[in-house]
Image (cartoon, rainbow, N blue to C red; front, top):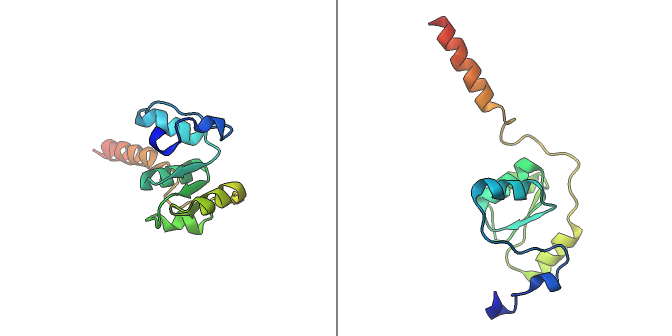
Length: 120
């Protein structure tokens, strides 16, 4: 970051905090409580959607086009002006369609297995 003059971005960007790398579960907690996520990670785009956190995708395309169509993800590439414009103007949609299930699959699997075991 120092090579590109980004070694102290906190001085230029309010509410930015640099931290050491974290594990997956800690990262999920950070994502869940974020105001917005800027990422080039496909997995993080989908996680942002699950958590209802607006996402700005820093690559030219995404495999999760349904999150873009739902208005929760904007693909901006690496264009600095576009990134800044989207971050400043992102309007969170009032609805978030169920795109990937309701999060209760494990509960239904356990119930089904339980029923099967009772039938013998």
